[in-house]
Length: 168
Image (cartoon, rainbow, N blue to C red):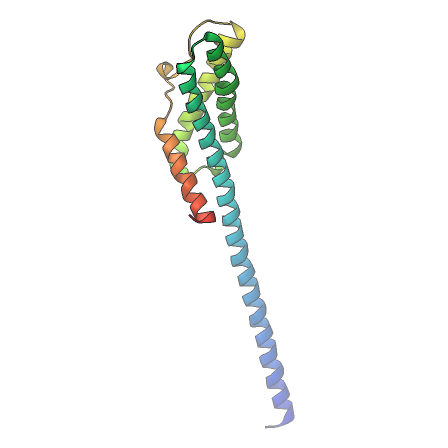
């Protein structure tokens, strides 16, 4: 074998090795970016569903306190400062981060959104506009029931994502 062929083989194999290395690097970067993107989505989804879940828990606990309240003043405070603000917060979270909610929860999330829209509307109509003395504001009988199963579904989804992200 002459020197020219040896140099040609060395250069050819070096070029082929460099090209293969470059292609492998690009494929590795693509996989890394895909994994990072999925991880970022999971983190955002976990945060969104966790936030909604904890606001629902806050509302639930406030409602229990409302029922046990001894005075109208206590009930109004709980309704105005906790329930109203929590319900508005859930509405805002769903409207701004709803795209992060798991697809299997969307139907019940829409029901919750309708429930809170109706509740907030009725709250304004009865408390802000007319200063009504009606007891607690319920919109379930008006055709907007609270989707009770959503609370557990959100908790399950939140915990599933949290465990996938951070382990048990």
